[in-house]
Image 1 (cartoon, one colour):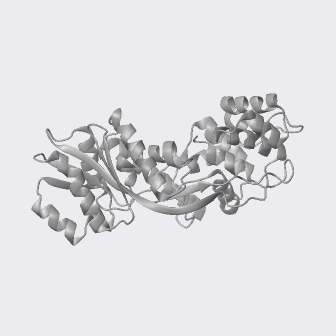
Image 2 (tube, rainbow, N blue to C red):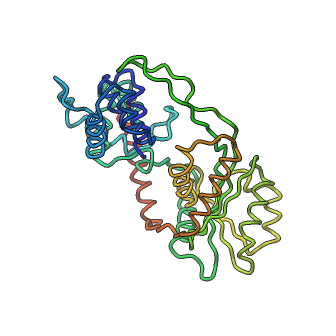
Length: 360
């Protein structure tokens, strides 16, 4: 569930009203697969109450959990503040914040600290829902400082939209340090509406590194888990990924990891001129299609999974890849290089205006 993080933020917030936190737990625990009878018993509410707030959340999102509290009118915020929230959300957080994208809490803190604007994170979350903004997914992206940004964007997107005839295009990357997490039972609330005294949510059993290659034309994925991630491991996986396509030109889309350009890799490329590397711009791994697949793997298989060991985690990943390949379809890439470059220019212009406004 995409809203899981938002719900966890609500139920763990010291500022959230007790009734809203309870309603958030109803939805969160339902999403984790708990029976409605158990939820009702744990929270001391009726079964119709459980059904009501699940339905309200499904219809209205977080705003649906606000209910009809006495004096619970929505925040009265000037239109200029709403516009400011929207504008900042659509931009990469300024340098110095240490953030790759905004969360509702961090944006609220930033507005108070830098611009002396006080709004709640609930208000920001409501604006995001109303405007369809999802900065943790695609609402913002980092402005690359790569001097060859335009050339690399044109090169990579050209492979997606118009691949060379008869050639194979592979999107390759590594998802590192995937943790085998074993869920523990959460400690129950001390009292309804009180803050919870929690033990650790998970027991950690170790990690694995997933090397994966996406065939851009067919959508099929080749994946291999390894305990380490270095140039030697990458080269071994690269050889395995290109082997089924012997006799064809192979174009490989990669990001700028040092493991992709070791002397051993360069030596192998010199001996295999039919394999061509195409690097995404620095800080722009979102341009690599395998990142889309990594996101699906995380949301659909790993994030809410329970793994008693690293071997169990690896089996889960292998099963997901096998299932994916039975009905594999390529991702449909529609953005042209011109579209991407135009958006980058717009974001860069807005960022410059933001810096100038803060300086004045």
